[in-house]
Image 1 (cartoon, rainbow, N blue to C red):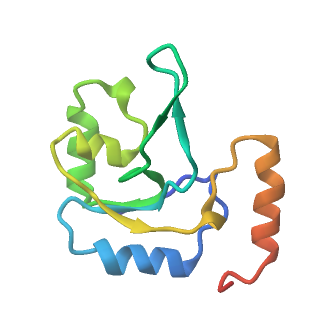
Image 2 (cartoon, rainbow, N blue to C red):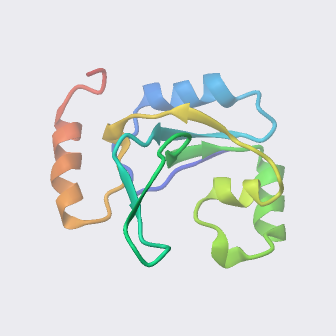
Length: 128
């Protein structure tokens, strides 16, 4: 079962095929994601600190899971408020969905400035 966030208009058939090909046999499912390339800062300690970006990814959609697994993950989540995406619910079961590299064109349109970036990608050939 594929779950897609309608706020990501830049998904392409090639991205969907890549997810299915790479993670289709994974019993924990998978999701598109991008490795973090920017320097990451945190203020959790009360001061600005740089956090290692090694192993950090930005989750995207679509995300793909066996239907029964996703249903169980959502129903059995110990803290439903902590679910940030469907993959996080599956992770709460102790499983590790597979990360499949997505594409920046699959950005989430959240802020008004995101619209301009999405329009740029949507005006381009998806193969570029």
